[in-house]
Image (cartoon, rainbow, N blue to C red; front, side):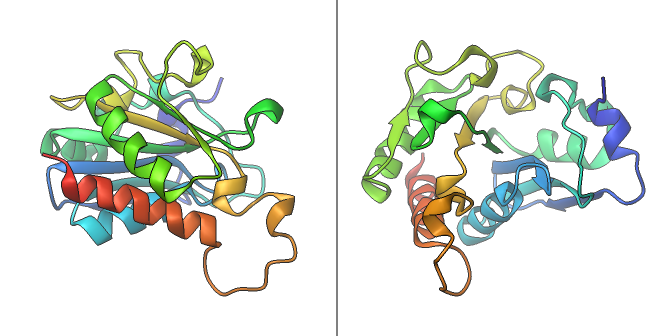
Amino acid sequence: MVTYADVVARPEVEEVVARRGRIGLMAYHGGTLEVLTDTIAATVAERTGSSYYGLVQTDEEPDHFPSISVDPGCSEALAAFVDHVDVAITIHGFGRPTMMSSLLLGGGNRRLADHLAASLDTALPAYDVITDLEVIPRPLRGLHDRNPVNLPPEGGVQIELPPRVRGLSPLWWDWEGEGLTPHTEALIDGLARAIERWV
């Protein structure tokens, strides 16, 4: 099984870090793996003055590694990020046929999950924003102690995004606008508003 340690050690894999505020955005399955997750996380972080950690693969067939293998002991950049922030929000991509319009908010900080969900409900009325851990599939709940979203002092929220909200589904095949799709822009706006209001 490929682990985070295997991937982060590769010279062609890029770690991107910005130490700013005490809220941190992460996207360690970025690049060609869970497409646009790093773009979304980095954009929200820059807009809100939050910190950011991303791991970007560029291979046509990138390797997936389990979140519980993402160990700060394997990366000085990740260790510095985790030590700097009080709470984390990780951005992931997933695809399940029965949940193509669902956003899943897992992770250990349930108060922050509810706060983010309220903003995303407003920003993305065509989507089902799910915070009920019994409804979220077990592998996508982000509750393991070794999951990096739970390492900061206040834990964090793991957000799983379907292809549609990332602009990757057939819904957008004939879209000819510039930049990100309207749903992706609305997602970024909703997350940014929630972070700016988080106390």
